[in-house]
Length: 346
Image 1 (tube, rainbow, N blue to C red):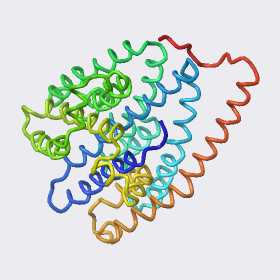
Image 2: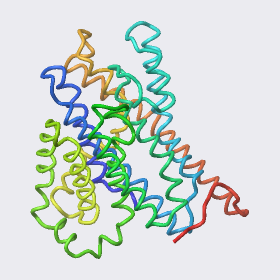
Image 3: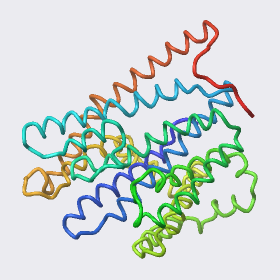
């Protein structure tokens, strides 16, 4: 699967919701629900794309290379992430901001979702959830057939539902891995069942119909239901399922009006910057008396830092990673491989 512009556009929607939520919460005290919706879009999309890449690799080569997967993720995620951490660490040392040592340590180890919240690094909890997913899921994909992988992903739906139901009484609560694993799992299931779903006529009639365009409105209605304690766990699960269905609609039927809007240049540009935007939006959304945290200067600072991060760190390291993997693939092609690759099971 090549790069799909509409999915970049969906990333733009996700990061836009997060930024809007963080900025608006300091004026109205609201917005957290929309921010969580943005994060869930990121989660479902990540599960779909990562699994699609591994399914494609297995079809092409008959195996999934664990080492290649981690190498791709390292070049994609780590440089911009640790650049951000270094920047806020310098600001902390200079007494511009204050960040507890626990926040730095938990962020460095990608266990931020199990540590106390702070205004400058708290948003890294979602990246920790994704990294925890990246550690486990490639191994599951390599060790199981498609049916087994579907079973593992499917089990996360009731597990997450149960954890969310009782999260107000037990730790780790709403930000733990298992409280959010079903978002990732829904994306994984769409990728795993992609060929099968194409042959389910009723399902295809549903997602290709004009009525399916109201799905975003249904999702927003479910976001409202999340504020009611008894409906929170169920509403969140339904949101994840509908986001996954919306992704299938966007990819499988690319000529629809929603897809055309998401594929437009403003959306794709923001989507391309979405990772850096997500990293850098939190420090400037603090709502303090500092001018840099007040509109419109905070928005200008977010865009400036994110653009610099993308152009100076993220994009160059992606190119370095691509070149490195290409050389590595040439070496592997020249001699038998005995690396961390596991033969195809299907």
